[in-house]
Amino acid sequence: MKSTLYRDIKRAYLFSSALAIFGLSGVMHTVHAQDDYPNRAVRIVVPFSLGGGGDAVVRYMSDKLAERLKQQIIVENKPGASGFIGAQIVATAAPDGYTLLMGFDGSIVVAPNMLNAPFNPITDFAPVTKLNDATIILVANPSVPVKNISDIVALAKSKPEGLQFSSSGPGTTPHLAGELLALRTGMKLSHIPYKGGGQAVTDAVAGHFPIFFTVVPTVASYIKQGRLNAIAVAGDKRSPAWPDIPTIAELGVPDFNVSSWYGILAPAKTPKVIIDRLQRDIAAVLAIPEIRDRYLNNAFDPIASTPEAFAAQIKTDYARWGQVVKDANVKP
Image 1 (spheres, one colour):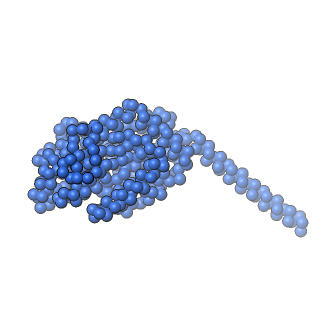
Image 2: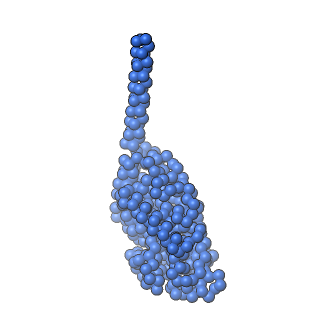
């Protein structure tokens, strides 16, 4: 009986030792993988089409970031569903730092308050850093006889169907800017959503709709060429890059303030050591004078926030836009 008991104890000891060794090797493998990060290409998913503001924000800094990471940066456009398609790809990706999201406040904190998002914006992502704040602008096709907000309101009220306006997608910040403008002025605006700013601006230049809300870089070249007319910016102050363009508040709509941001997010549970490495390298890239000037010249204010500060802003903005959607009774 003693020999049987001895054998059972020995088996249990050997089994527990094997488990301990296996667990330790797994931990060591994870630690090694984090220390070795990155050892292959890093993919940044842009949830909007090529040529839009979000696409530009990533491409401005991707080459310099690749130099710091010593790995290729692959920028992959996955437009559709107000940015949900691209965001869902990242939310369900392996939390290893090799699949990142170019997050846009419209798809992360605005649209989920209006639409059935396939992800939770608070729990399904690990914020890395906010890249920048962005100026939203209202432009008009030159064929439309408007020069200011009063002209737009008068034109809309002269038509039984009102006016159409477009944005990069339903539930985006530019969409909400249009809805708020209609609410504050009493005019009727009908929203035409797109899968991204690139195609929307092409149709705006072609005259398929009269007015368009977007971020400045999407339309900057067309404004300079006279192919679109800048009416006003939607923030609480004029853009340093475009100081001659008034704010919507200056044109008679008090306390009108809608701005936007872009940032980098990883899947939830991505190791903190990887998050911190990415944040440090991105912050270093944004501090390069050449890159900083590129952002500023296109009405992007470069900001390299900490992961904690970015996470706090996401929570605050999600609650804020939820209240705006409710107060304005914005429907999908």
